Amino acid sequence: MNILLCDDDDVLASMIQFKLSREKFGDVTRASDGKMAIELLNQRKFDLVITDIHMPYHSGLELVTHIRQTLKQSVPIIVLSAEGLENTVLQAFEIGANDFITKPFSPAELAIRVKRLLQK
Amino acid sequence: MNPAMAPWNDPSRLETVLDLSIIALLGASLFIFFLFTSRLVKGGRVRRKTKLRERFQNSINVIVELDSSHDAKPAAYQFHYSDLQKDMGRSNLAKQVMVDQLVGLKRNLSGSSANTLIKVYLRLGLDQFSLRKLNSYRSKRKAQGITELSQMEVPSATKRIKSMLRSSNRTVREEALIGLVRLDRDMSLDFLDDYTSRLSSWVVMRIHRQLSFSDKRHLPDFSRWYRHVNADVVLFAIEMTRQFRQINNASKLAELFNDANQRIATLAIEVCGDLHSVEVADHLIQLVKRDWSNDIVSLSLVKSLGKIAQNDLHWQALTDYINHPNYAVKFEAVRALYFSEHESKYLQRWPVPSTPDLDAILRHVKDPLLQS
Image (cartoon, each protein chain N blue to C red):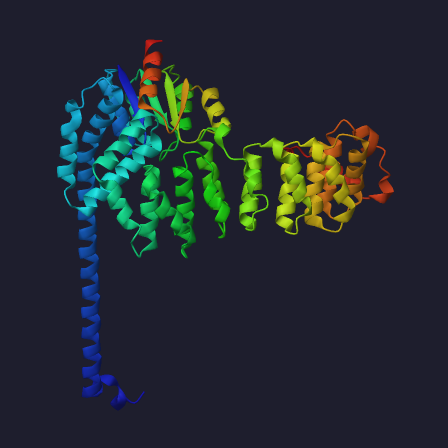
């Protein structure tokens, strides 16, 4: 399994990467900004994408739109955000995200949601 | 100019010019040297911080993962604590990097992982490191210490932080306020009882954000502060009543309609409208004539009435506002009537000659760009 993790917070991304590796979900590739994420997505396929909303160059929501509309991929997408406003959540789902987790979050909960989406 | 007077013909003046030029050149060289060395030092510091961060991160990841999983034996990860202690040493730079990492993670994580981060912070003695900052004469450092201690939920720091509510420095005062909200486990917000300083909109927003993370059932009844001597605290309490929809406070808000402070009175009126507190509509009607000449209060009144009008008396009062001298007030009255079920009864039968601009206002009301 290949998971793409898009977050510009190095420390948090490192922790998530560690957690997912420990859960043996597969390889976790990290993108520290939207531009890098899009380049990676254009080069290869991933089994799951986890993305923060606020990132340099392209936001997480732009990334979701790119995956669904440009690449036309149905890869499961989890959106992570400190912003839990109703409008943001609804927008994420409307453009094709499969799940939305508000920060602060529990890594254990993230792992369960990843497992559930990968099993589907 | 007389060639004989030119500086290059006068040896003593030439010498002075040369001396000044040498001094200027030396000064510029020193400045460039200073810039270059400070960049080198800064670059070295940044590289050192990055290395430290990478070294710490692995141990933190292991400790958080294994400690919060509950099925790992402590011995499996205890040596990581020693590693962290050794890597940190006595270096304040290393301690600060560690604290920044822990605080940064704590902001993003919840549950047992967050609790483990607090354990790491305390076990490495970093609470003492943060506490020492509260003694600093530099307000930025003090504020940093307050943020660290409150983010890492060190309850023993509460008293020290509370004493900083009286600081002459605004940044320290505001950080102390936010810090106390974070540390306030039972959400009583008792520290507001004696608070006499300003509460800026920025701080109110931050407090609101902090309170939003907590269980809403445990929030205090904000009407407790409606009669506070500090007008900013009263305004804060009214605003929080709106944000957290404490609709049971409508009658207490109505008592503020006659407050001597216009900001308090208008906010109370607005909030009653936003909370759809129909029980105060009659109170609002009594203010219509009294505050007719006050455009600010009239605007709040007409907006609220538009949301909570229930009977003919209320709708008639709204209709009266169509004759108000202030355009914004007229506009709100017309808008409320236009979008209500009473449009045909009041608006369509309104005698136009008494309000020649009624057509223009209606066009404005119907403009889709203005509809929220």
